Image 1 (spheres, rainbow, N blue to C red):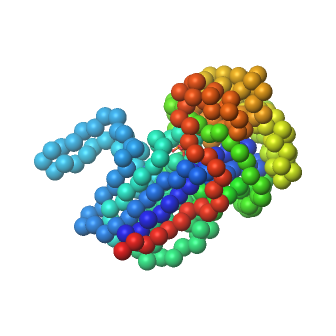
Image 2 (spheres, rainbow, N blue to C red; image 1 turned 60 degrees about the vertical axis):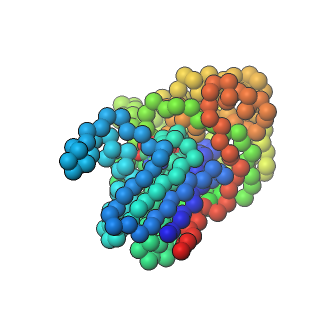
Image 3 (tube, rainbow, N blue to C red; image 1 turned 30 degrees about the vertical axis):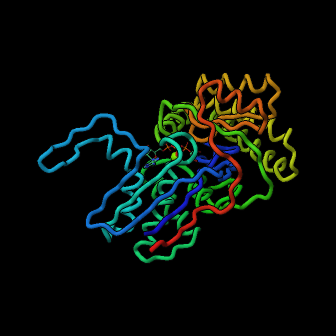
Length: 314
Ligand SMILES: Nc1ncnc2c1ncn2[C@@H]1O[C@H](COP(=O)(O)OP(=O)(O)OP(=O)(O)O)[C@@H](O)[C@H]1O
Ligand SMILES: C[C@@](O)(CCO)CC(=O)[O-]
Ligand SMILES: [Mg+2]
């Protein structure tokens, strides 16, 4: 049996703008997904946290006919298809969080399946190769998206993605956060489409907003390297405001971020695709109380450094 352990991630700064070539900063956290791949006489995918709305099963051959099933398994199926599904296997995906919470669960699912299934087939891929393949898979499912989530999760630590479509560098430093998530009304794939629509309706204003986010990211990188938490925190509030102008936040999260600022919490912002989902605040006892007060699920969010790891268990 092959076991891949895959860290989830938070976007510190630059989500959505990074899709259009602006820089971004992201960090893997101590919350991990586990993907196991073992010998089987037919290919079976098991993922306890997935739930399917609406199912039609023909009992004589137990054939499932459900658009929804194909949609929610699309990332796993595309990852297997990349290798031509050469060998039947039982693929188990154990996630510590629900799907689609803004913590990179789509990228983690892909990275875990690519890492474990490729090793099951006898390949010894490097983390960079896993990242490259995973980025291709995520883009083929979503049609839109950047290299940020798949590269951060494959390589681990705090990653800076400079302007342009390629390149990445690991950044020193640490960010102490409280991270939680609330229910989302949409997947990142759908939210990315909506942002693209805004761009098409008002290209010049859109460019102003994302290039300002890019400037925030550059200042945040400096503040991170200087260990200036006050500055980092203030930039989180500014970044959140710019994301609100893109229409990717949600009333619950906007209200929480404004309350955090009033309470004197150094920094707080949405994280990831938005529409609800993940929220990151600078570490402060008030942050956890505030997240709990809106029913957010708080996750373990120490910085992790390794990226995806693979073990062979006989
Ligand atoms: N445990 C899992 N098993 C199988 N597929 C999963 C699992 N978790 C997530 N996925 C897939 O990823 C999709 C969610 O991706 P989405 O990008 O919307 O969320 P996210 O990656 O958590 O958020 P973000 O991209 O904003 O960080 C799910 O709809 C499902 O297709
Ligand atoms: C919203 C986005 O910037 C981050 C999603 O976690 C999309 C992407 O970068 O692919
Ligand atoms: Mg995703």
